[in-house]
Image 1 (cartoon, one colour):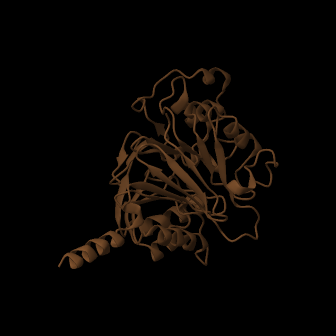
Image 2 (spheres, helix red, strand yellow; image 1 turned 90 degrees about the vertical axis):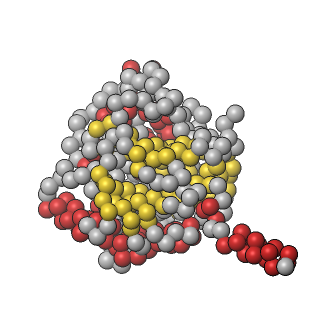
Image 3 (cartoon, one colour; image 1 turned 60 degrees about the horizontal axis):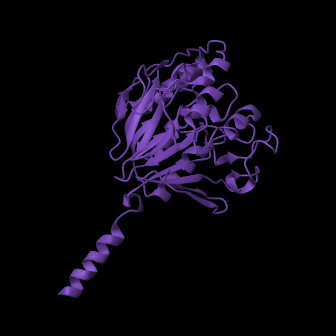
Amino acid sequence: MMRKIFLLIVGLLLSVPLHAAGKLAIYFIDVEGGQATLFVAPSGKSMLVDTGWPDAGGRDADRIAAAAKQAGVTRIDYLVITHYHMDHVGGVPQLAERLPVGTYVDHGRSVETDKESNDLFHAYVQARDRASHLIVRAGDRIPVEGIDVRVVSSSGQTISRPLAGAGDGNPLCTATKPRELDPSENAQSIGMMISYGKFRVIDLGDLTWNKELQLACPDNKLGTVDVYLSTHHGSEESNSPAIVHALKPRVAITNNGATKGGSAEALSTIRSSPGIEDVWQLHYAENAGKQNNAPEPFIANVDQDNKVSWIKLEAQEDGGFTVTNSRNGKTKTYPPRP
């Protein structure tokens, strides 16, 4: 009898999925300079941020499905579309053919109305209308069980009050000037602060310079983070020093392509941020120069001939986390802050 009980307990333990082991798993999936970031909460609930490019063969949807399989995910509980540009929303129809989606999350209608933009938005809406739909505004929460997902920007607006523990004056603002108004979908991006216990990671989509300054100046409404997903794929149109340096990330992850994003200016800003320990990149940035790129072990795809690789992060509730490069198995653990 005792042996049967023992075997039953062992069987139950072995049947528990890896994502239930008290960790937040994040997969930064290579979609060639677009975005597709998969969050798997300790509860097992999943949130995918964007879906990469459209492609007749479903290239990016296949890559997302492969990462989901690796994570033990068979359903996307929340699909967040930060904004309606092709490298973020284009892959939705192909993804919906591969994985069921519970709730689509977006900022409402597109502000771009040319034919290509209308066609892109219409294709998204056709998929979205087959599931639940949630429009979020700055200050809202996305109810992913097991993690806290706070919306800090959406539909051209940013939070008016600082997040808990934030709100200090930002001396970096005096040296940072606004740029021309951005009327595009980039400025409409849903930006999120995602927290699991003491661990914090920020994803601002493709939010551009002036909107970043609304979050960082004159007071830093965001506070500090452990991990910074470089805004706008590491483009010089975003990643103002006033926000990057105020966030003081320990680690930055850049979802760039070989020739898209990963600019020398943005990478230099990130690498000079106070307290930065490492930068990890999805691709070697061919136009940024060797001095601005991360060391080769920290880059998931070092040339166009490489097998497609992703970067995986596992975070603990105490704020410690581990980052792994799937190409070479390079793993580094970052202990909790003192």
